[in-house]
Structures are given as C-alpha cells and as structure tokens.
Length: 225
Image 1 (cartoon, rainbow, N blue to C red):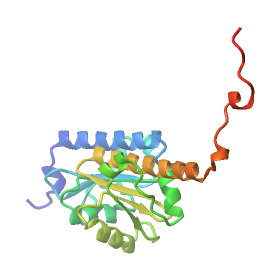
Image 2: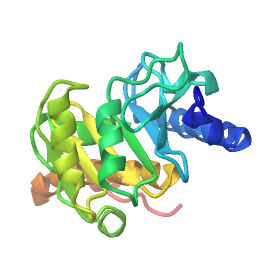
Image 3: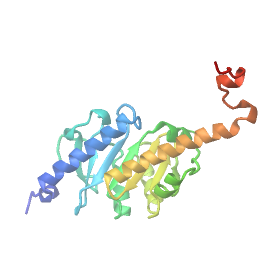
Image 4: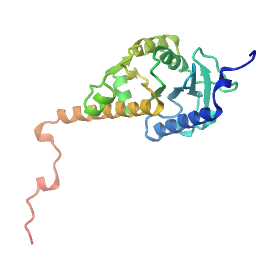
C-alpha cells in the first residue's frame, strides 16, 4: 500500500523487547568500563527483515533508554523521524548485508584492547577462552569515523565468515554474533584477552630476582611461642 512503512510489518511487542535488550546490553558495557562518555554504538538486525535497530547519536550508553534507539533500513533510510542514528551506521549496515549469519554488531572502546589498537598491534590470542570464542583478531586501518572508506574496509574484513572481532586503529573494537549478547560477550573476551596479554608480557619481563617479595622473605621466621 502507498505510504506504508517497512516498520509497519514489525510486531510492536517484538520491537519493544528488542529496544529493551539493546538498552540493557549497552548499559552493561558502560557499567563494565568498556566504553566512556557517548562513545560506541550497538545494533541488531530485526529478525526476518532488512531493518536494523541502532543507538541514536550523542547519547551515553550508560544513560540509554528505549527512546535512544532508532530503526532504519539497511540502505540508510531512517524510519522513525526525529531520531538520528549513530554516524557509524554505514558499517553496521554493511556487515549485515555481507554476513547473513550476523544478528548483532557491538562497537565499544575497551581500554586494554584499545591500547593495542593505538600501538597498531593485534594482541596475541593468549588463553583458551579467547581461542574458543574469538579464534582470531583483525585490525582496521585508521580512517575517518562514519566515512564510506571506513565502511568499505570493515565490510571487506567481515566478509570473511569466520571473523568475529576486530580492533579499529586508535579507535575501538567491533564484535559480531548471531545475537546481541553473544556479540557483547565476544567484546568481553577480546578485552580480557588483551588485558591478560599485557599482564603476561610484564610477568615474562621480570627477572627471577625481581619477583614480588613477601614480608617473610625479608625477615627470619618467628619462632613458635
């Protein structure tokens, strides 16, 4: 019918639940220190459609409510007038078009992972949880946020059906998954892996004589009374 919006075909109850889930996961990320200020953005594919639900621009993930979410088409048409999507929507949309298996995209700024991204390095995958959940980590070049060039490079990387996570140089992280919670958990594993990699490097750098010394190492043992 003329004038009908693609949003009209979405069950309002389902849409409400999806908004609430997007808010809950975004707040969790902020509370766990994975994103500061108004940075980062998460999205999910509305099942059975070519629509995505994404965070609006300029809002803090820790303060989000359902009014801070917006539905748009994969082609970039905003279906809820008055709500402006994150400027990163292009590469969210591009990932969904390239990867039918992806149901959600999570973009955060976790500090240990970003430390590697600032150093233009990919952390080694250092523990079994990361090997199982992440498999490998890609690196995205430094390009203007929200640009088509950035979207093109991210699309090329995530066209690999095996890729689950990537670092954005001097920026943040991207994780994808079949659903929002899985993508979020992959971000947590990515950050934990980066933290452990840095701690392990510090431990290896210690000489045998630089280990932590407890008080009993420095004084004779007290005799039993």
